Length: 110
Length: 119
Picture 1 (cartoon, rainbow over the protein chains, first blue to last red):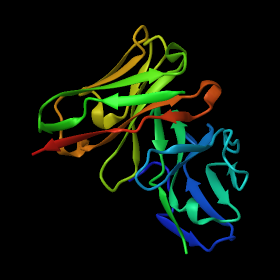
Picture 2 (cartoon, chains in turn cyan, green; picture 1 turned 30 degrees about the horizontal axis):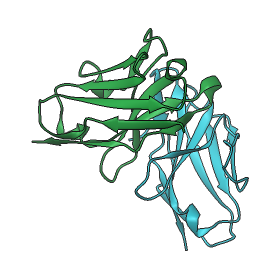
Picture 3 (cartoon, rainbow over the protein chains, first blue to last red; picture 1 turned 90 degrees about the vertical axis):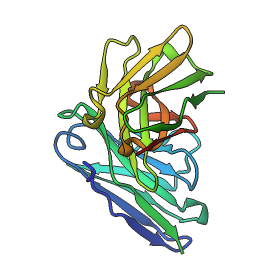
């Protein structure tokens, strides 16, 4: 059971906008930044969003992040087939003194 | 090019030991926190441990405390994970990860090395 809670799967059609939620608690999301990682099939994860809503260079602006209280979300607009991947949220947990991840959300582009 | 290359994975019997290494290049290794993150077959990501730039601080996930030790050699740009008393549930791909400065997240990942613990 992951400390951060994500839906196991979601789907969308090309061009559509999808959102992925991530729920935590006051010791992690509630008091620290949220990060999002994308893992394409058979590859290592890649940083997608940092500090709640910042995109590293090279990440398209179709990807956006937000945070409110103890929850966060990742939005992907203009969905493309190459966005089909697993997405993970993460945050530092002050109580555990650990990085904690969500269980991951598998995005299928129909 | 910024790069992390893991090595040392393999097949080991339950209760055995293994030491993973990670060679860093293309950046000032001694300036960054470093982490190990693992992924069991068909499962999600699990953070394992991290270490501060000067080795003055380390953190571990509860499931590996007392069994795994993270360390680094800044002179050689190497990160290590010593794994003892291995269990079947430690079977995973282990990624070496750089933690970006100013809370920029886990911004560089290695390709991973596979550890299989046989029972």
